[in-house]
Amino acid sequence: MPAWIPGSYMIRDYARNVVAIRAESDGLDVPLKKLDKSRWRAAPVEKPLTLVAEIYAYDLSVRGAHLDTTHAYFNGPCVFFAVRGQEDRPCEVEIVPPADEAAAEWRVATSMRRKDADPYGFGTFEADDYAELIDHPVEAGHLSIGEFEANGIPHAIAIRGNTRVDMGRLCHDLQTLCERHMALLGVPDGFDRYLFLVHAPGSGYGGLEHRWSSSLVCARDSLPARGDDAVGEAYRTFLGLASHEYFHSWNVKRMKPAAFTPYELSGEAYTGLLWVFEGITSYYDDLALVRSGLITEQSYLELLGRTITRVLRGSGRLRQSVEESSFDAWTKFYKQDANAPNAIVSYYAKGSLVALALDLKLRTETEGRVSLDDVMKACWKRWGGSGEGMPENGFEAVAAEVSGLGLDDFFDASVRGTGELPLEALLHTHGIQYHVRAASGSNDKGGQKLDDSRQRNVWLGATFTATNGKSTFASVMNGGPAELAGIAPGDEPVALDGLQFTSANADSRLKAYRDGDEVELVVFRGDELLTTRIRFAAAPLDTCYLELIDDVELDVESRRMAWLHA
Ligand SMILES: [Zn+2]
Image (cartoon, rainbow, N blue to C red):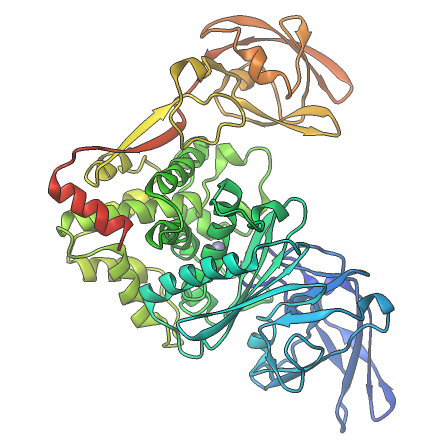
């Protein structure tokens, strides 16, 4: 059984959920020997071998398998065994409806090819080989289903947990988005269907890409209600997620790093290129929203401002490069602890900013002749259908080749280096003004202009979490006032300056202080009461917002148009 699922770079050891396993052949039991955490060997047999396994399925994530009285959802790596040496053979799967009355109305949504199953019915499905078999998540339950065509190719969306959605509008918007992505890199060979599998609980967010489908989790209220025709923040988040996973149909599911060609699922597969496959995907996910007219330029700039803010707020960007972040995804990005903001950078967020910087640099320095779109097209042509993976230096070599520019210094600094990206200057060449300011409080995600009076004067240099009403310090920033006062992650704030201090009142309490003020801070560390003094420092300018510059020269205006409305 696989130790991990493609798209989620962490060892999960799916075989740990095998509760019972046995084998038989020709009516007789066949001994099984467990070889390691994920492999078994059956004694030799003459006739076909049947393996029967009981698997614990109660992980409600896009990477797991979950079965209860309301639905069944699974990813292939959680439940399907590979037959060593026969991974290339075709596979057939029969999915049988539960006998329970509660399941009588269930429908089955999957991109797996149907052999005898009716559309959305139970029955037999087939896949060309094991790699394809585990690339089709399956959802069975009470589903709201919408169908549409994008460039004539059948697409569907199946939603569990929301029956009040405006399906007509959702399908229309997704069609616009999908056709936008198809226009960039063209329709891949064999891309004859696509399914968005959506789970919409009260809250949640996540996604996982596959070749003919994606699994998405989004808050129920982020889907458009009937009669609602605005693109609010929540729906914009959903569209960005769908856009991200759909773009992966090209970038990582078909064009892949050489390290994933083929996927070696027994252990970690190391590559420094996740910033290309996740970061560039993160760049195009929101860019496609503005290019397709689903959101305004202003709304797009707000999203960009927020991404820049996310990167600025972690000093880990000054210690880890995006190439290192990619390589160490298995043990760092996917296993974040309280120190993560000080130690690591996201290959998603910073990777998307490297993509932005590269795109704007190419456009400026080639006078509009070459953009990141052209680099992606050339990469796709080389690695999209060849079956070969992109070598570690492949992306950089193609970018240099397509543009004719010497890009070594840029990639050394932005991909392998930890300096600040030259975004302010590059955005300015495209008629966008870059600003940074102090945050207004812990809920300020950036992206918007705010009066000075609403920005905070001082900061604590720590974040909070609140669980069941109890506040604790989550991350403590290197060199910040809290760290200098000896505060550690997990400490429970008790009193500041003699008054009760919690995550709920922190923003308003801090308004009373100025740079250099020093007061008493009392915390619990475990059950021990600690008293310290904290000296406030000026709030850092770590919050970015972007503005369109009015009255720009014609060439700047046309550069901006070519970028945002290609
Ligand atoms: Zn992704």
